[in-house]
Image (cartoon, rainbow, N blue to C red; front, side, top):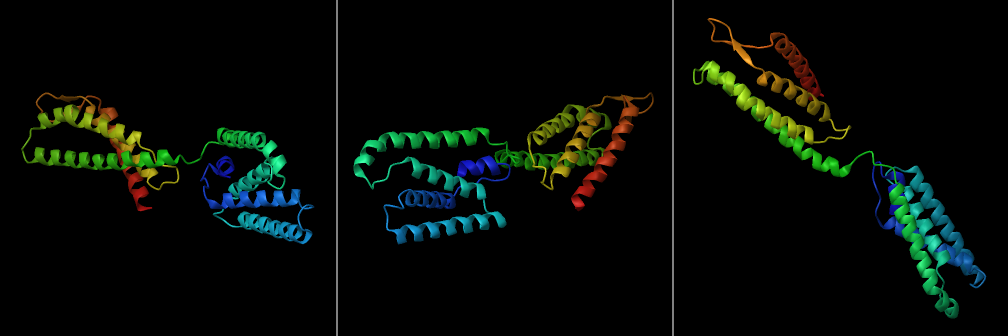
Length: 260
């Protein structure tokens, strides 16, 4: 039952529970009584077949019409139980049972293994990688915190320059030697994370990564000091202006994503 659930429902979830086993026992009981209905009391076999038929039909209709019920798991259990009941010998005739139990048991085991491994092997790829989702969210959370901390450090650097605690030239050198490598590390961590397409944090993550890429390029860009000036200017002013313009657009996108 779980194997059939994996084949048909692996894109979203997999059912593993008692309901498939109950359907398996029900299918086995139905097949056993139907096969030997002539050897059993007529009233008993008729009543059991009718009751089991109603139970199977009602349960399958309910699972088809209601959300949250894995019909594939129920049908898989029903088919598996019915098939094994058809293959395995009953104890109604002990002489025949002793002769057939080993070979029929082996046949039932082989059939079950082939069906299980076949369904698992050919099951479609899942739409949501649960393991990746669980493991991928931790780097995202850590990376977002490190990004915020780095932005705070850059802001503090500007305050220190304004207060005269550090020179403009030293701060300019630190942008390439300290802050650009740190931003590269943060980007590497963020890029290693994973959020599913339905996660509302995904647009913010993408915007943050793009902002980090722009900032890393800006921080790593060489500067020059024009004659008579102690203010560094980008070696490529055109590209620096493009980066600034795109950063404003990305910031607007981030604010929009956070407001939703």
